[in-house]
Each structure stands twice: as structure tokens, then as C-alpha cells.
Length: 73
Image (cartoon, rainbow, N blue to C red; front, top):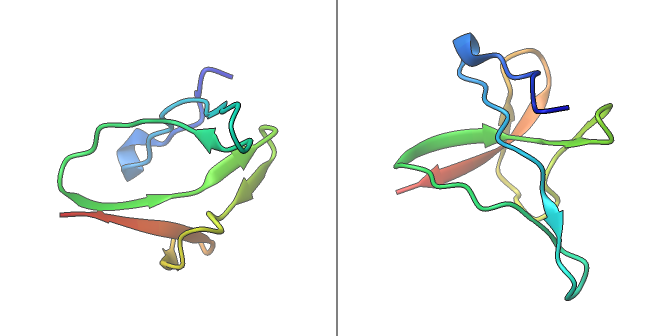
């Protein structure tokens, strides 16, 4: 869907599609990030937002839901 759903005014950016690796079936996407705090979630099948099960840091996403938190020093 070309990631047209981001709300840039709210600081929300949709960065792209993940690719499934051949080894272990892991989904990956590399994104260069500067220092800061980043909230994120995964959009699955363009309909369902999921939290990252590998990241225990969960915060309010600003609209009554939850998002994962990534801190880049």
C-alpha cells in the first residue's frame, strides 16, 4: 500500500515492508535511526496492528492503544 497511512503531523511515519529471511523465517527491515525514543507497531495484512513480542517496553501510542518503545542512545 506504499505506506500511505502515516500521520506525519503526529510524528508517525510508516517506513516500509519487512522481508522474510530464508533462515529461521524471521521478518526484517533495516532503518537508520538517530538518537531518540521511537514508538512502533507492526501492521499485518494491512488490517491488524500488533506489538513486537520480542520487546517488553510498551507505552501509550497516543490514541488509546499501545506501542512498543525503542530507545536509541
